[in-house]
Image 1 (tube, rainbow, N blue to C red):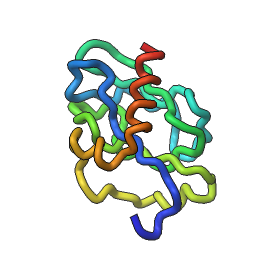
Image 2 (cartoon, helix red, strand yellow):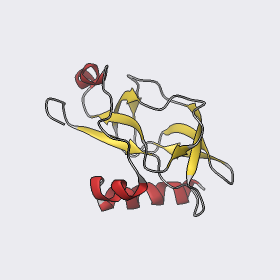
Image 3 (cartoon, one colour):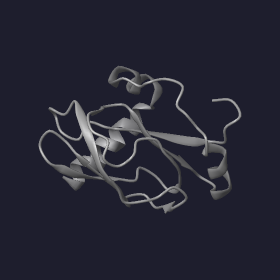
Length: 126
């Protein structure tokens, strides 16, 4: 994305083996909040239970793209943006994703290590 500072795109991961969609029950952090790896970021309802979704890395929550209460959010849909520097938050104020992400696109656009890391975080907190 030209013109934007370095950032991490956080998609909705599969939080259970049968999950195809989820509901964003609540965001535990707000835009502008500082994040530490492992902080509770959101509560997400799967087809089985409400799960705690942890922050994948340190930084600042620059943009929430899917508001609390959103239902039937597909796996891979971009949930939020994290930046390393607080000064970079303003660059995402009017950010709109260019595409709708599908589960197949996540594995292509996200590094494999990130997907594995997200799975490990979910399994540990489960």
